[in-house]
Length: 488
Ligand SMILES: Nc1ncnc2c1ncn2[C@@H]1O[C@H](COP(=O)(O)OP(=O)(O)O)[C@@H](O)[C@H]1O
Ligand SMILES: [Mg+2]
Image: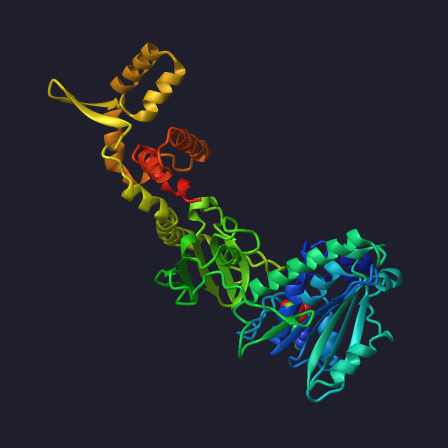
């Protein structure tokens, strides 16, 4: 006990109805909530987990069964207590739990009634229910025992040990809807489809032959490997280790589209939110995936970096450093690691761009026209160097033609050319070479793509074969830097 100068004590317990609403407002998505329940099953050593649900309008239920070690009556009551474990307490190295809250907060975020039934090798099944309306009405945190759990009890009786979590009154999704409400039904099924793909992603390292089998409505889930490790064209970067080897970082550059056996395989590898969304860091805590592609504000997600994916493996005792949230869906690298991670990622991203641009580059090399057209040219006048805009550049010719004022354009060019800040550029370049951006870095490149496609169309309409037309365009600056715009 802390030594405080206390002269009176007064109980001020949290009021159940407001606590309930607080628990409910943590902001779990349905998929994150189900995953949190599965975390417990996996931590309990389950080899098989079954996720089942039955659409019955507002009577719809969902259950998660496992054949893990289970709980005896005392442990079950302890597990039902909100905050059953202190988050600062150290945990078994394989434990996926975090705050001693997941079972309750995840369940209450989706339903108003949570029943947990469990049995260990040594004990008979026991069960308890949290009914939020009962808690609210009675004003007390009392678990209740209800008579309607026979099917789950019967199932448990066939198991050596295991646990069943049942959600009833899923009011977030199916409040006041009838069984024949087709709109509500398809909305519910769409949510459950998200749950399915989420589980295939976050538990992908656990699912597989000889590992854990997760059944979704009786059908086994298939692991989704974000890194396509077994694909021969996937490039693997060397592992970086931090924090005395506790944190492992490994970058992957996924194969170019042309290396996939089919469009379908390429799309399957993209992930549920598409290639662009799934680039970035993937954070695993004890093998369980928390973050599915994020650059943590170090970079923007851009099309040409979409093949870059980097895995970070963490143990479960760095939660505070990495700001792992209660839903286990957010993590952030600690400040002291950000520079290192950024440098590592820059390297992976640079390689990913190369792969992404590969096909365009092949066309570029094959059909490179005799002449390369730079925008800027070096000229010598009276023994001195100057830089001039290339008047023979096809795009410059085209633009001057379109503007219809060649004389003014010439005047403008001359002004620009005579005042290029060469000395300033030279000084800056020698002082901080890494600070010089390359053409269009960080800028919106969509207009360039549009322009390139327009030029392509125009050349094709003049009878130039497509690949040759691409080659001509790609031999002009700055289009030579964007061969990937001709990828599709
Ligand atoms: N499926 C399960 N099998 C065995 N024990 C479980 C199961 N689910 C929950 N428990 C027990 O209940 C406790 C509380 O779970 P939870 O509220 O999710 O918090 P946490 O996982 O952070 O400890 C767990 O630590 C575990 O001891
Ligand atoms: Mg848990």
